Image 1 (cartoon, rainbow, N blue to C red):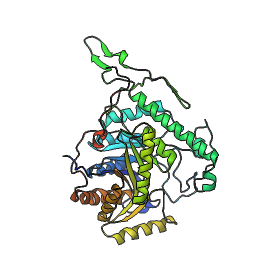
Image 2: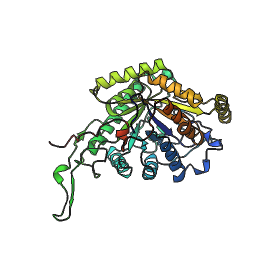
Image 3: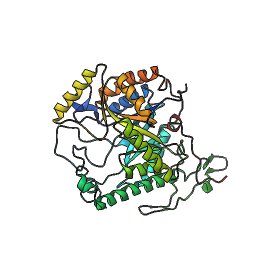
Image 4: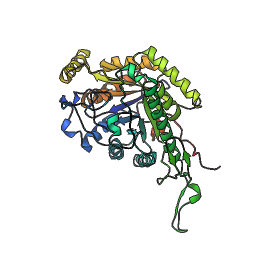
Length: 404
């Protein structure tokens, strides 16, 4: 069943018990199950029940923290997590339609390893894989690997954060991430689609002429290739990234299929979309589809007073008002639908919702918001494609190395 032309795309971002730091204390949170496969399977299955395009799964190379710059000493919040790519590989075969997009940190990891991990995820999901590429310049995370160092970067102090030295470090980290994605994409293409012959009669399993060296040489990586994993079912799984400012917008424009942005109103959304589209043109991708999703943390209840009270209760439990990087919505599914349609008119093509309490706000999205959007003819009533690229209206790309 097809969507209407006005339909928006919807994803959810899954992070532990939810995005509010006190979410684990709620009765719906299941804190004792956060490190079980069943917990994650239930969340992704619920998201699929709501016909969502995809889920993203948070990850990092350091423990969760209330500080934007490094670890903290709190023992009253969730600490510890499972590997996002492995969660995705576990839940993907238990779903049929929804995209599965784990977070991967480009800094400190190798694109060769990641390319085959996401290619494998695309196989086990039969074409529903993606990745969310992330950059880190935290000193404590660099210390886990011991191969490089970063200066102290205080994002909470603009006078220190905006110095030329810090901005140069960040620019290099984002350039590295763009190269990382380019290597991953070339490795996905390093096997042609018809490279596997599998002909027992002639004894030929592969056609070696259809495997290609990528010979990537850049400032951060030197990768010969080819991959050891055949080209993924989608050809190119989806690449996405969260972007708050110009350096990250450029990464999205150069390397991604989806950018997540954190505009706080329609005017700001319009300005962000304009800047991202300009960067997309500057990157030579003006003719390509690049989705721009708005990120929102959501507290959803049928009564707006209940949502506000719940947020206040969680803030009291945490000991401070939760803010975060993205705007926070508190209210009813109908009120959220109004907001999403208003923001969509600013040029956003979809939204990634962050459930404040996964066990409460995810079902409120799938069973409250989605039916409301369907009543407005603003969201699909059935999955209309078998792959994540198909759900997002993206064609399967030609292989860059294949000869006519």
